[in-house]
Figure: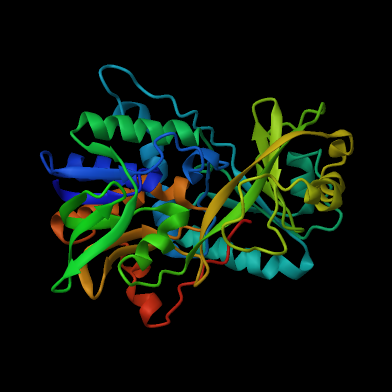
Length: 388
């Protein structure tokens, strides 16, 4: 088999990239290799599926803004045979909270965000109490609220819409597992598949999400991307929290509405790789529920209904994505390590990498700062606003 571009991984990054490649270059032969088309363990299907502009790295702000523009028009862009997907985008905002110890950091982040066009407001305790009367503000110094351009959506719906539209544009999805990457004269010439066949390709792309590190090792490359389990708790609360945004508390938890329920999570203290995707219920009563009730008194009566777990593809080098070609293997590309920001940045990141592959340069969002070179040269580009 041969393809102009072989994409390893058919989750949100692989499918968004495939869509953009065949949108920018109709007729390009693109094959997506996905070992589990059910996406049972895919981060794309298990994410809390939110989008924000409140980052501290300018490239992340630009990626979020460009992705938001796409999400707002996703129904039209991803239409197939007259059917328009509904990804349920709701711009409910993000609200970061800080006490006295974190106020300066939050204000510094706010300056960066405003400089890059993010619609973000700083609110003092009195303003927070007026806008969110259900919120306990006694220990707070400031809050940073996204007034527009932030919220949440149906992540699995976006993934399936990208994949369906990509197929309609001629992309081939191949159910297989990549077990080898063959390199000759400093270039990838084919990928070996688990059934003994191979796919020769002019370009190979690692879009394997949490498993990207293992795929990179098939080419003899160490990629600092790891599968880290995160549990999402589904909570019932009879009280109505009017105009509730996605809230990031000083204690580290996050929560947001999900239909007539709420979902919430927090980062684990120990964070080993590749844990089984079984929810960790222990921290709910020990840590999360007390912190929720302290910040939102109505949650004293909350009830845990269920939970699920998914993987963050964590880049533990600097918590930013790694996008672009490998300097020593110019036809091997990466789109990995988004550290919890993948779904929200996929539309723009997929477009940017497609531009680089098809035309040799980034034209919509300059992704050069996210290149692999910084890892090899030990130049971390640190993102400070990482949730979980």
